[in-house]
Image (cartoon, rainbow, N blue to C red; front, side, top):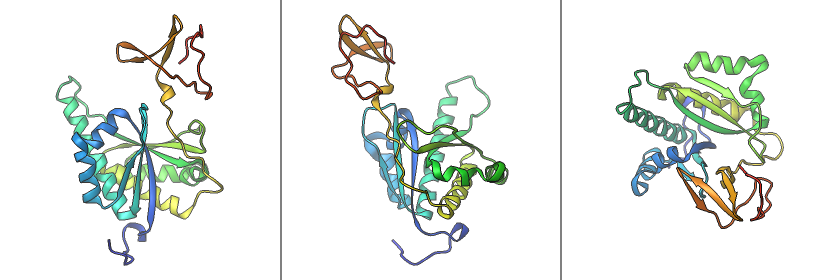
Amino acid sequence: METTKVQSEGGLNVTLTIRLLMHGKEVGSIIGKKGETVKKMREESGARINISEGNCPERIVTITGPTDTIFKAFAMIAYKFEEDIINSMSNSPATSKPPVTLRLVVPASQCGSLIGKGGSKIKEMRESTGAQVQVAGDMLPNSTERAVTISGTPEAIIQCVKQICVVMLESPPKGATIPYRPKPASTPVIFSGGQAYTIQGQYAIPHPDVWMPVHQPAPMNSPFLMI
């Protein structure tokens, strides 16, 4: 990869890491059959794309590389999601196309800079890109990170991500960041007759080792319904 300093968007060309929070279905779309889609994204963008392991309803997708490769990877993800929306619409009566939505995971200490004084920065991003941007008020569980949701056309999302990257580079995180790690515990767990079950679709599957959100093994004879 070129090590020469290229004056790309906003004079940026530094290595950056962006974390995305995705649902299982979205992750499946990014991975593709036998990993073909993510392989193509890695090759064409030049960015490193890692997907967190685990049988969780949510997964973390980490994109690392020089800023221009990150923007290419984001563009490919946004267009892939738009393609999925168009495909799902062909089987539904809906006439208006829903926007593409991506969720970034950002250290809470950088969110103030993204919002700006009295919301000025986030307002400017919305107006200049046409994307909807929302910063979650609460931190993600067991972390010091917040979700930043971006919705709009793929083009609007890409422009918005570029602006967010500029802000994040200008205002590095303060202090240590505890990264958000999705937990498998968000699958509903039901206790019945001394046996734990997880709900998968319409079926209750016996669950051999259940962990509660408080990180304590669930007593198998618990009379309570634990979600």
